[in-house]
Image 1 (cartoon, helix red, strand yellow):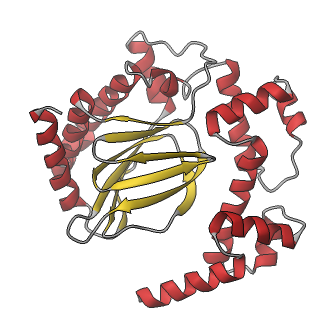
Image 2 (tube, one colour):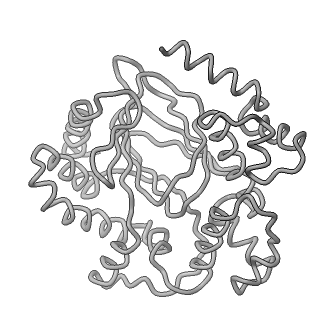
Amino acid sequence: MTDRDNANREELVEILRARALSEGPNKMAEFLHFYKHEGPTQPFHGLYSPSICIIAQGAKVVRMGEEQYRYDPANFLLCSLDVPVSSQVVEASPEKPYLGLKLDLDPSLIASVSVESAVAPGRSDAGVKSIAVSRLQGDLLDAFVRLFRLLEVPADFNVLSPLVLREIVYRLLVSEHGPRLRQMAVYGGNTTRITRAVQILRNRFNEALSIEDLARDLGMSASSFHQHFKTATSMSPLQFQKMLRLQEARRLLLVEGLDAGGAAQRVGYDDASQFSREYKRLFGDPPTRDLARFKHGTALAR
């Protein structure tokens, strides 16, 4: 690690300390989100969108299917598809809170920078996972710090941040993550088909879908579709759909106040016992106990 990298990491901590004033998420711009936690968290189940995530202080573990990714100030996490995950802050304290951020990635920006830099999207059917962790250093780290400095002057941020965003995308495109990033902007081939499949499953997760029919509609054999989908998401299409169903069911229980039976039906379960078993397998408790624990924790926090 160079002196420049060390200085940039220290500056990043100071910037986020000043900006992330409240516990949890702190939205700084339409595409930029800061997070602060003063202690380790319980696993959070949700959907990761295409983004790059970095940490100034602390550490986090993200699980996608059977894969686990840990990252910290020395590493960043890159996500190139909408995928259901669980994430957990594993290093944080009141004295040294977890300070992290997420930068949303725009596929149209990636396509534009690819063309301008002669790193054309083209066809890329290489099997790459949709999440990866890599070292954060050098020019990429420097670009992030310069982006955050711009927050000090809103007028500067509005005018100059698009330029720094293009640099960040370029740095990623010419790195080892170029194929992973280009799969967000690629036209044609199996990558596009898997992206379409993810969108279909997200929009119709509560329906009884035939994977064979879905593969045929995408112009793929069932075996090829299953293989490419699992390579990208670390889950089979049915496991992916189940994760989406259970995450939405939990939101309906905890946020909208539905009972377990109503939530199960809303997300496509006909068998209440199966729903309860699969809910417990993912979240650690059956629906009613999970709801009671959530209400108890909310009451204690007041």
